[in-house]
Image (spheres, rainbow, N blue to C red):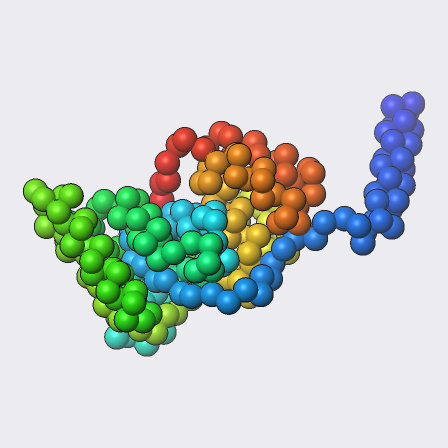
Length: 249
Ligand code: MHO
């Protein structure tokens, strides 16, 4: 009996504290979803798109990421019926902060299977360029990479970008969505299709939570992403745990 009274009192105290907090709402950080910066697109097929979503999301200068299907002829592919499409990551980046060469270096260094071994079209290694400059850089880059891997034959294709079909919501920011409470606090719950595809903070956390970017970079960026202290602490724990672990799919 006594215990339940004291429990209730502390609940009341907590509620009071929360309502005080919310009267300060305006000064509390709010998650940074929209960044209005001129951008360019890069599109890569490099195996299962969950890990490339994380790989690029935490990269400086990457504004947004979307996973989807591209490169095939079938209309309206879906995960269970992909036709001749490939899983791809579409990256929106600020060319003043990160260049196409850097994105390509992440491409070459973060998938192996499919680079020189023929596998299912779904996971094929493909670079989809959006303009002539990207085409030139990608082709030069592939030649350079082939020299490094002289005992293998790179089968990565460099081809023009075609229709991009965003994947189902549950594939977007897949690693972040595993943290249900955090995701929904940020407005990135499972039914937020638009934000899941466009959110800046969503792209970043989807990388950081699996250790991409590392704790130093995370701490430099965290408050600018509109996270509160508790959220920063929560994410930091996972960044630290995973930062040297590498990506899996
Ligand atoms: N191993 C995963 C791959 C998912 S992926 C988005 C699965 O079979 O579910 O291709």
